[in-house]
Length: 345
Image 1 (cartoon, rainbow, N blue to C red):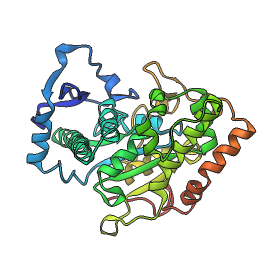
Image 2: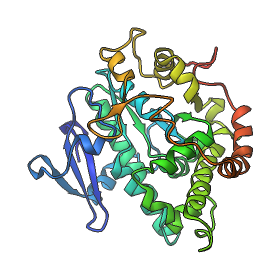
Image 3: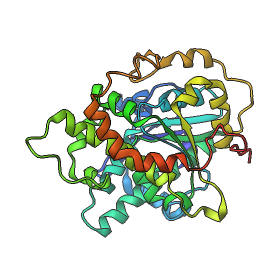
Image 4: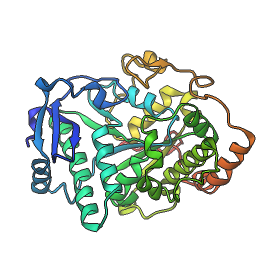
């Protein structure tokens, strides 16, 4: 595989041991999912390669064992503005944003479902190779890569890369857990069927789904609350840093929506994207569009993003599950927009 040939992955067929690649976009694209930007139904533009070719490239490059330190990753708690931020970041010609790529989620799910250490090591090698290849391909074409992960996928990638001491710079976008859970139970995510997957539940330190007597709404409320907790804990808990360097900053929904221009500039500085202070063309339009489909929907922090409120019992459940993680978040490293929280390296 050659990173200079202008192709990036768009699909992963693990059962057949192959990967699909498609020509790299020459300018910013604003779809919420990279895979949607490049649909796989047009076979004329696709090149299928054996997965072994990707692993051989990574092994020769050394990336299979040590991914590039330039990795820039966005983790998020869902329904927190991370899609809008990714859309804004992608407005820069020099930034390539992969937004919740399904091929990476498939690779992460493969790792979560591994039945033994050998399968897990093999699955982790695929995840590392995918990240390294995308980063190398972006660099080969003069662009800086940012990957916005599917919410739970960040837990797998964090593990694959060796935690916060590993080779990545993270931005965690978050929102009040009760508001997040209210939105997810009202309008479930695209991967909602996986909430009953035993492997994913084990990843979140959850037992099997609730007893038959437990109401489905209550079960979903508990699941999404545990998802919020599981996503926040590893980023907010004190952890050894690589060479003493900070590896994570935080951006909360309230701060982001109050000053989207300031938040974008701060995120670009933290992620070392080399972007100018001037706002990119199309910024105002991007601020008014929250994309969860190609058509998008108007962005309304008090409406479309808030959805229905939880019952008193639901809010109590969410609070009980998420309070420890919320407390960690309150004591964590500064927000990406905090004074002194930027990095211009």
